[in-house]
Length: 513
Length: 124
View 1 (spheres, rainbow over the protein chains, first blue to last red):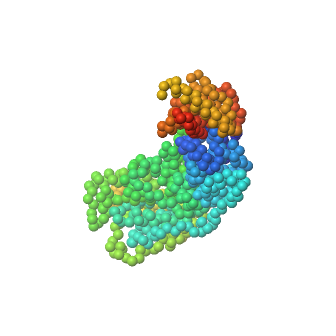
View 2: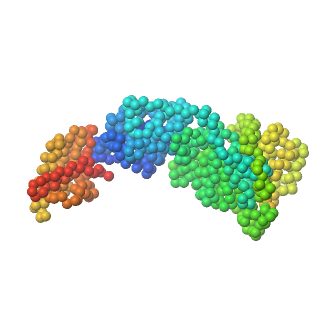
View 3: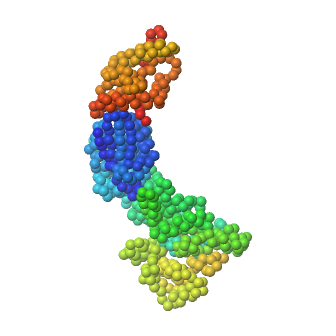
């Protein structure tokens, strides 16, 4: 007795079809699973047999072989429990196979026969839709996540008996639907606001420029100056995600098991703040069972590295590929996986080991050697990819005791959005460029032309501070954003002048003090 | 218990087990099927299953559950014999194959207690 159930598996953030073949023949009771199953898949034998028994069906005491095709790709996870159980039930004639060729079936089974939620459902639904499958049957808790995919009938089940009833034609199951317009119309509002931070107008302006142009930023200042507080409020001034960005982000979080049960779509830009003891694989992705890293979880959002010099050197080194390519490629013996990782990098650090190098009142207690060693922990190539370096001073008492904290986030965000729109329009014909920060040298030549006076200032700065070519390009990009924020086509002296201020580490002695 | 008595008890137990199974609707196909050293006490059929039965006989209740006496070593023996039987006598399609244990407690006074453990073990 042979039965074939359509199912899915996820590799990276994309899903591909898996055929669950069940062959039952007379012989000493045996249960073998082939097709490179991992431990969780092999364990499904116990879950499936208990679930079938407890759901009131008969578990055949025969020779059962399960093949997960394609046979040369490793299969993992517990989402094959349900298709295996259905395969056994249809092969023994206990459940009808009329819908098997038109529906994908996925889910974990508990011993009672209840169906439990799984990861990566959004990717699976999209794969099913793209393959022309009519419908997908998944755990009830995953329904809203899959329902955002149009062109596919999404049905959720809570128990083995329920799906059996539907397949037999005894029970009607309405396909679920989700109102995307409503999901997007009400983006989750964060309660954090820029006005929570007193003073620091200069830094707030730098953050606004960073957000507007997609520039990476490094904040340097003594402990307690508000670096972390400001970083956490950056998402409140970033534009809302587009549907495409939301789908991508949701896929990544779903595959990592971070999507809450019942959640439909992530509509808020992610803010990831890994601790500085994180491993390379934790930061970029990988591990023996490949998983997305923090850089991918921050895709379309913000990656905040607090206490930057405390991170392992190797971890900072592996950041280079995602920063350069906007994606991470993880290779294993059999397969190669791509994870997207386009994010805004925000770093924070003290100017020296004790932290008070730039604090006029407290004074620094580090020796020059200590300071030098501390700062040299930052690799040139990493710093090269950070457009803005800014000093964050200690907040004066005058500012701390103010009642109002300056401009609120909504106003800043409006300006950021308008600036972003200018960039979307500017780069509409280019494929890999979405914002000013991503411009290559040719784009800079085309879009960042400057007049005589501005040119003169820039040349002076380069000579005086011995700036590199990279710094020169950075300053031009920043000037472009600053001019855009002001709604101007032409870049003027004041834009260049402001941009130069954001390169405090470019000075020869490489300190902000 | 001396060997002769034990053997007698075992034989009586198997008799009773076979009778019990027939009363329950099974058809006994073979008794004492030998394959080399290994032996299967009873092979029986019902509508949908072929059952290999191991009979355990006791003279009194001693708190020792009968199925525990069918330890992994014994199970392997039974499985080997079962495979040999199936190779020799191929079975119709669609039949479940099962391993049961029937425990008979035969008291000196002549009281009989039967316990039938269906699907007592499966090949691992």
